Length: 171
Image (cartoon, rainbow, N blue to C red; front, side, top):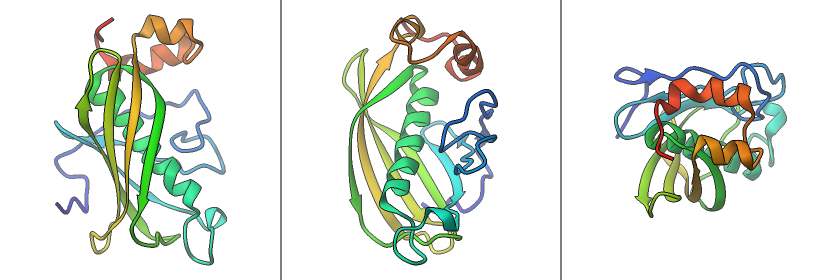
C-alpha cells in the first residue's frame, strides 16, 4: 500500500523533553523521526543523513534497526496505549537503504499475547518507489504507567509527556 504522503494520518505530538537518538526533535545528531497514525498503524517519513552511512551512500544496518525499533515502539505505545520496552527484535534486510533519500517506516500490531506482551511488525520502504527494504518483528513488554515508573523506564515528566498518547491505559 503506497502511503507516500501523510494524508489520512493524524500527526502525533513530539516529545520535546528528551534526547532520543531516533525521535527527539532536539537531538542535533539524531534522526528526528515524527510519527503519524491511522486506526491500525503508525508511519514515519525519515531521511537517513550522510553521517549515518555504513557502506558508501547506504544507511548503516544499526540505523535501520533503530528506525524499525522506533516505529514499532511508538506503534505499540499509540495503538496499545501502554508504556513499552523492547524485549527482542529480528530484522530481515531485503534491499539496500540509501542515505539522503526519503523513506517510509510503518509499524503495526502483529499479535497481542496477553496484558504484558505484544508482537509488532515494522517495515521500511523507499518512499519514491515503494520498495520494501527491511522488515522487523519485535516482541515488546507492555507496562502500566506505574510499573514503568517503578522500573525507572520513565520519570514523572516523561509520563506526563506521554499522557496524550496513552489516554487511560489498562493497569
